[in-house]
Length: 518
Picture 1 (cartoon, rainbow, N blue to C red):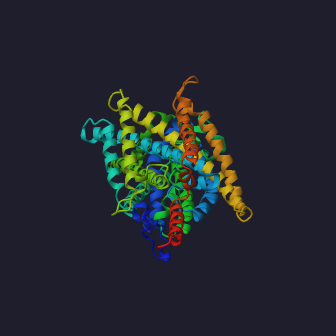
Picture 2 (picture 1 turned 180 degrees about the horizontal axis):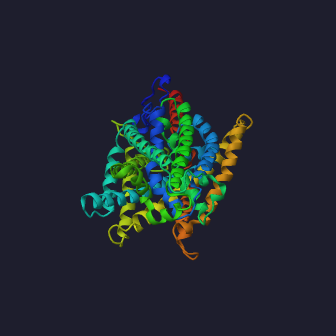
Picture 3 (picture 1 turned 90 degrees about the vertical axis):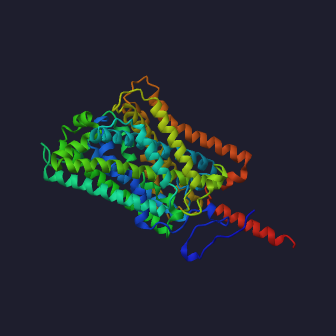
């Protein structure tokens, strides 16, 4: 057993391992701003406004979408009170599964690890479909070139693979520039709408609780939760963050608060621009083109063209964010023995989780290829890349993240109660309990209404198969955990411990060496 130390001064708070940097992410790479940009990029404001919001308005018929973002923001704040407190006690790139393992036990941690890989990968697959379709349309419109949607999707995958090997602080700078430009352009649109509202004026009808009606309310909740995905990812970067016990929780609250306000304002601006009475029909007719049509009428063609370009770069930023998260989950799982040991290594130069990054790239290529091979529609038809790959994968991925949030909230309660700190953390435990009720309710109605999302009849098996993928991932992970407990108990015992397991090994090795006569 290797015993070479790579520890540093305690003042740097570097989280490292005695086996050297190949088993450790580089500490102190991200501060508050860098971490905030990294997690917010996953929500991709332009992607949500142009891609997700028209779907909720049109496919699900929910006019009160702005109100949904405020409600979900409140629910995620409740979730964050307990989750953020866990981040002060546990620093692990496995985040969700590490917290769940420490609260509910290693077997549940194994189940959550597989669920997290599948859920976040599904979210990334979804974005590849929409990005490919949008870039294909841009080539068609501006250059007159016929390029299948899967070509730019594969090209984006290659670009993400390269960036995934670079330093996380460099990635944060790329994400920060793209995110800032996106937000500025969307705010300009919001201001233009207020200055020049639609035929119904500055109506506040979208904030009326009565507007929360429609056949797909449950799925709309799931879809809108997808707009917040990223806010919960801050603990994934704890090992690469300066002062993680402070910065991680701070970033979580900032991200949830900002996302809730920004999304509610932008969704309201869309209803004002089109008119609350017309927004559903207009969304059905124009789909992802809704934002661009409303923008061109107020800000002209040049601004709209720029918006199209930033729509693509925003999706690229989201892809990079998801890639970084999945690669770090794979790294944490490799470090603890849930995946082959090679996945628990980082590159010598950048400290990036190299093998986890390669794994995610290969899986993404396979997913894009699978959808491309089943696309028998004519060029420019959005059925496969948008209505299937983006909508289906985005929804099942969001369902998986909701499930992880609910399990993590339960783990928070058990973790602190078992340690005799239930009374001390009573407000956080109560908020976690309320979050569980809300998240389980959303998950239930999402599964119940899933047929609305995919436009399937009552007898369609897809309405159960697609959400069932997340249940299968969780159950498969639980079975895997039980097998490890029986076959490899030492690996089972490590689940969720991260670098702490290696420090324990080091202490045992040192104690044995002291007892061994020279």
